[in-house]
Length: 243
Image 1 (cartoon, rainbow, N blue to C red):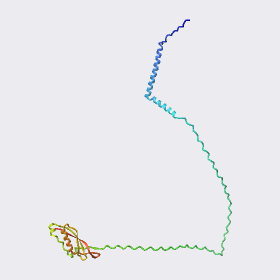
Image 2: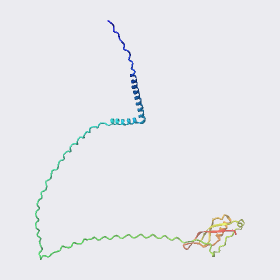
Image 3: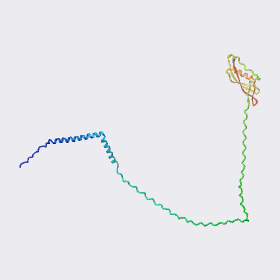
């Protein structure tokens, strides 16, 4: 039996016409891909793609947020109020006929009977008011304070007294001592000086003692109280001045 022999077909070799067609398809595909990428880059740069996303996304978000409306459940009607019993109508009162008034017969007085007028009402008795008690006498006015006593101080300047001037100590003149001495003197009722003391010193002992001895020898007009002579203290000033 003869063995079959396999015959190998020659490898497919493209024809010169098919090669340019395949190249044209590849060029078209590559050109389309490149054009798509260029268009996408241009859309990103110009903001068209961002606007498209902004226009699409809110619609999707709103679609997710909006829920279908739930059916509203009508509230149950309130229970009917209890019936209030109506008051029974009262019977209307029946009007009764009033009796007709009977005529009143007036009795006229007879002409012979005298007509007596009713007595006048007695005037009301007014109780006499009791006399008011007399007002108590006003208290006596307090006595006026006594007038202050009139005091007359003693005096040593009367012309008729003939009081000599105090002598100036010779040593005080040589030393140039001078000043004012005030002597306090007790004048008796007879006009004599019983006591004397220096009230204000001149600063020099000789001048002070000379003034005291002088006023003790003088005569005075005694002091008086309400015109009555009275022993009084009296200040006598004496000046020692060098001329």
